[in-house]
Image (cartoon, rainbow, N blue to C red; front, side):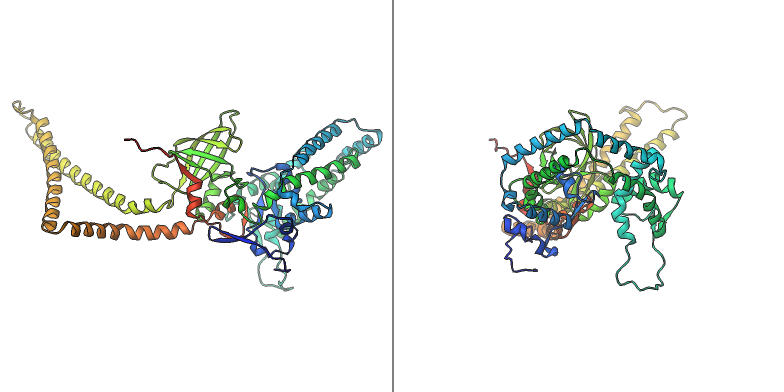
Length: 524
């Protein structure tokens, strides 16, 4: 800690987290050891949260909100003299005033330009015709600039020079591959960058050098400067309204955001769901409430499987609009066997809108100790069943082959009709014989078992059976216990583009809450 402020903590999922509940907690965040923050940065897409507040927090517009931007928002409120206790209170007056401000902004946008504003806007619009460097790709410049902005921070970090690097080094210059060895969550963005910016401006390339990257950014510098210089009509009034909008939105939503960022009290609490919980999937007589929005199923699954959680990916189709999306549901209780690709279910988002759901992928993992207990027996009985089927099939095929050979041998001259059905009777007899052999094997095994336990006290038999059951099932249960304790929801959030700072474990209570089954009365 950098100061003497006495922080309060809570423990959940074997993780000790700081509480963020009061004005003093928020005002002292700048001095909280950053290793104690549960999140280092978060993605702005796929969240059940006010999108405009996310846009205001994301000062750089890169689609990610880091710790410095969160602290900047707190400092901005402090500079405005806001009582930070308001962040954790219901504020209907602020909601009403926000609606008025939004209406005023709409009216301002519709108002005709005065002569001065119109002249400035016309002059700004003519500049691309006067300076061809502003639009290097013509009408495709805007899309290319967006593709560049989507990966700019990540590629800048890739080419960042370490502070301790000497003046002369033997290390080769870094090159960014454009088609291989890429982090799956960045592949789609890099492909868009290559197609929309790299190839049109630099030509076909298998990799980008540091010089290539700087050259590419330089080509968009005039366009970005031109956008930044766009005249604003009624600038003073517009700035004042935007400033008030920021103030109101931070009052209404920043407290919730901090409780999903600095700590995970929303995830581990019993009240409002976390902002990344997007709805509930109903499938196999269960309700899965820990669902995440997914942009790229394959890339997400490649990283999310490191969570050691059982995951179900489902394609959703809105019953109302026909829109499609993909979610990842975490299975935390029950069984995995009934879950398979192609199975249909129903999804309800946080607005209680219905979506048809079709399972597209299942990432299997241990779900419960009870399933682990019976898993060895399921494998054992499955193996015995397969062996019996194989043995009986071999016997039947051998008998059938013998009958077929006899029929072919006796084809000339044709034999007299057999009184008992001829070949068909022989085949049936061979099948019955094969079944009889199987039944005989089972009967012999059962007789041997009964002979071994005859004369033993009944409780000896029960103890022996219990020892056998434990010897088979206990190792599986112990291994499952360790696996269940190591489940990490943070890995799933990382696959969604977040930078989670600590493991987010699942307790037994949370597991039962995130996956629930219907409670039915016993019928007599």
